Amino acid sequence: MSSAFVTASGPRLGRALAMAFAVLAVATLVALSTGYQPLDWESLKNDETTRTIFFRLRVPRVALGLLVGGSLAGVGAALQALFRNPLAEPFTLGVSGGGALGASIAIVMGFGASIAGIPLVFLFAFGGSLVFVAIVYRLASSGTVVMPGALLLAGVVLNLIAGAGVLMIQFVTDYTRALQILRWMVGSLDVIGMDLVWRMLLFLAPGMVFLLASMRDLHLIAMDDEAAAALGVDVRRVERTIYVASSLIVGVSVAVAGPIGFVGLIVPHAVRLVFGEDLRIVIPCSIVLGAAFLVLADTLARTVLGASELPVGAVTALIGGPLFLVLLSRRKRYAAI
Image (cartoon, rainbow, N blue to C red):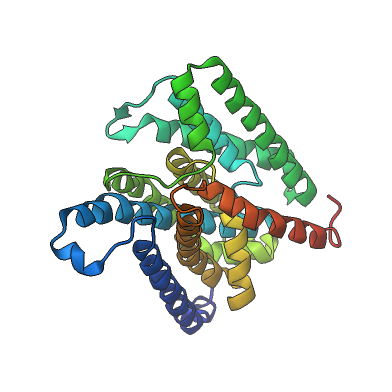
């Protein structure tokens, strides 16, 4: 790979990231300032109640939204490039469904413990995501070609299977755990304290590092597998890296926040509209703007009804669902689904 190719996006990437981080800073400030309980910034210095609300509730919630939103958007951009399908994202490909099923099994079996500091619900969600992405790829592959129609169909069917599995688990378990699963399935960023956020970061950070480290090779693969291989890219190794990293990221995100859909669909498309198709720009900017998007969606979810709170997963679905249908209708011109 020539040095010109590697550095071509440098100045553009810098400008794009500067814009993305500016949006993120505004979104974070709005989220920290907005809520059912109004906060006076001056009172943070000496009012204990205000400090408790801010540091124990609002800051962890915003931090969780930043992590989950950035993670889902980054994975969505990577999967769309890998499968060369603009409709691919963790929710539509069944990756979120696999994580949800794995986490539900862990919840109903009472696996709240940890192994070497790793929560078992994280491991079950990661395993479910990894199994489902492998099944989707196997069903949609014909030799070295991935069929877009089969890809979406496999993802939809696996999501239905995962949903049926979660409903069955809820039906046979006790009322307390069934309610816990129900509340978790609608998607929520409700968290107290930063302990869970730090534990998530231990898993999400390596996944994001692998994702970002693969983006230049993924940029070539997205254009053409054979050309990428001719330029020295180990296509199969990159594919495996993306599968494992995506499953880890989505599994941990789903285990904590629930199966929040369409973040990985909306944000990468918005980034491509603004900054172009270069994956070396799309993936990092999707991570930053995905964090901003989910934080703003959660702010809307917890303020629009006043004292009541909407599930953030419902807000992202109401925004992303219509967009998915628009993209699907456009996609019909290029491939039969």
